[in-house]
Length: 279
Ligand code: C2E
Ligand code: CA
Ligand code: CA
Ligand code: CA
Image 1 (cartoon, rainbow, N blue to C red):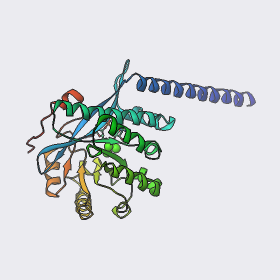
Image 2 (image 1 turned 180 degrees about the vertical axis):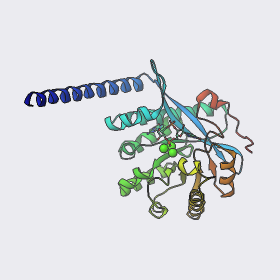
Image 3 (image 1 turned 90 degrees about the horizontal axis):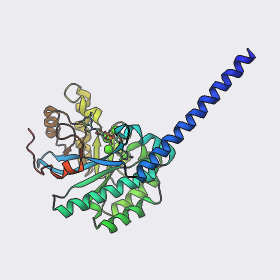
């Protein structure tokens, strides 16, 4: 029994060591990816449901991996958050977003509001606001072309600090959006003290709009209340015309999802028309 115990310990220890090594290798690979600009942005159009116009886009990061091909963010963002590399990765995404807006301006393409996902560590990073200020100056792109998508959970962990940072971002003209709204158990009441411009209704509510009466009522109520608080609403994960029309009937302001367009690479997004008839 003693020997088995010892062996088990050895096995456990070895697998832990292996984990540490693997973790370290992944971190190194990610650091290299940032350094060598293997991370690229795809853009998913955000559509004004009343004007039938593209008014913005969400920047979604992908890793063009030399061996694995295109790797999606769910496979490396959690690691980056654990290792702290999300700060560097996040600044990279912010810089690339400004670069893209400057590129659009140079080509004379129609203006868009580019939304960037912000992790919790980034919101608490004292360098965030100075970095954004620096980008605004460097690329000569006014802050009102940029939005940050922040989840409820991120905002509510340290609400006093979040409020301070959001107010500083607002002073730069930046749009503040609540991502995945409805999944984090926060109420609009809690959010009314924060400078929020846009609510993003989570995909899970949109998915079941046609079949689930409760989801339908929730979405309709969220939109009505948000509007009373002067907050705009975007629905994510719009995949069918039925969902889109239902959202229109609830006076939802904006929509995003495969029905309008999948996330697309920069050059394809350059060619995306400003006005599309969606019916
Ligand atoms: P998210 O912010 O909720 O982004 C929306 C995700 O839904 C994207 O997945 C998008 O491709 C996908 N999607 C868009 N339309 C539809 C649709 O109609 N149907 C369905 N089923 N899915 C749709 P993606 O690109 O794999 O990103 C996953 C998550 O990774 C994002 O979720 C976001 O939390 C995170 N992420 C992406 N880019 C960044 C980044 O630059 N920084 C940080 N911190 N997180 C990022
Ligand atoms: Ca998002
Ligand atoms: Ca989302
Ligand atoms: Ca999500």
